[in-house]
Length: 300
Picture (spheres, rainbow, N blue to C red):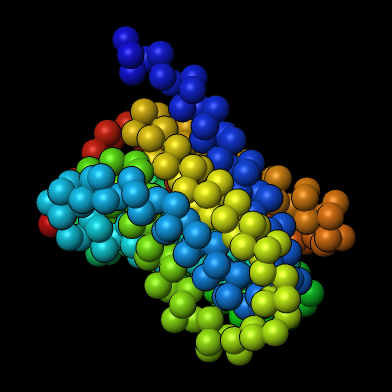
């Protein structure tokens, strides 16, 4: 009964999380404009999230120490994937970055089939074809080869692949509670951002220092709301909902991201790019559509 009563709240949390992340590009680009270019803004945001979540993680240190190492590594890898996603907004168009990330159903199905040995229902195979077709249409919209252009698009594509690897491990091994998982997630993102930052851009020694107050405030707000509160809430909600519902509700991120980028940044998609993006979203729906098999089974 308690589980049943929590479904409406969990649904609202997942729906709100997708919508909230559709606006995530705004603080990321604002930090870049304040003097934290490239990955440095993501370093600031994830560092703030780690600091804010640290007291909660320390209170649960025994559970963290007893957690499965594969699960912890998978959650941290998921954070690294989101760090790439975050950095991608500095270098690429918002809607394209989000859609490239949402190709995760394709990579998840391939990893589940060829790495984990899970059965691949017909709808999952169709999702792979539709998703790859959407990728080709979207990236080849200008008559060029359907290939990512620029570091932002490459990072978005890589983030989706890494997230697929991470969620496979989380699905198989993780039972970590939401707040502790959010801390590990943010810590993995921080490590990835720190490693990438000096490679992408030099240390912003002057302009960011002159605006330390606004930079610090925006970093703490973004780290607390997006990386702390929303991720902990999402992890609480996902265990209470059917995976299909979670996947579809999170697609609000695409709609909100595309609309907000068009409204605030003047980034409009061409009709061909919209068609490719629609195919990507269709692949996501096909991937989470119920197939009648509650659990994956090994094929050999």
